[in-house]
Image (cartoon, rainbow, N blue to C red; front, side):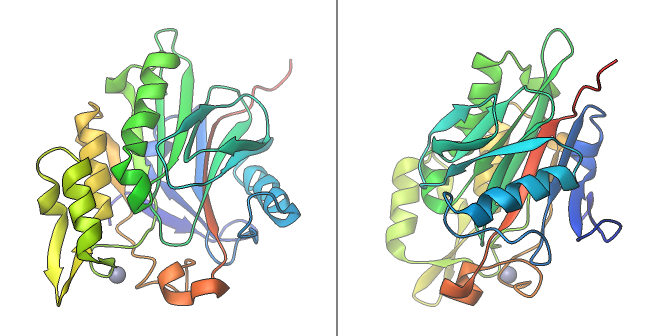
Length: 257
Ligand SMILES: [Zn+2]
């Protein structure tokens, strides 16, 4: 889909979005199965090593990540490493990436500008439970209210994730969504046999729109990890054998001198 590119120029393939490349002081990227090998455990040495390698691969000095728990909590960070239990991180520290890990769940990247012109960034891990908890809206609120980012300056992108073609859920998930999300949540579901296809991309696009992010500044990769399980890790395709790919975003490091 428009505005999403995977480059083979580096040590491993790296996906980027035009919408975020438009900000010269922000760097970002999305890895694939060929990229650094994250552990499934947030506390593992493999995850720390892969986070460091991913940060370096996009031109950042280090990265912060979280134990992702499918909720609505956003943390602000100013140092690398495991930041705690949450599903979104924001930062304005130059050189520090905030990094999410996925095997099907949408990872949302965002960057915007404060009144003094400086940038702040964030990511959200928008699993279905975290989406119902409003994680993308909460991340945007943290950027706006706590960090002073003007909402009309925000650029955002939704990384490859389980798509509306494949992401099948039971009636209990639809009922939970109808209860948790404001009117209109029914449009995110299509009947599929006795079950439902849940369009998590549309549900998170709606949170971005409701938060005042201009639609023309929001990019959707349009790549389904279940369809494209050979390129991106997919819990639905690989089950317990699934690794994790990552999306990272940060403010470009300031060079001394
Ligand atoms: Zn699909």
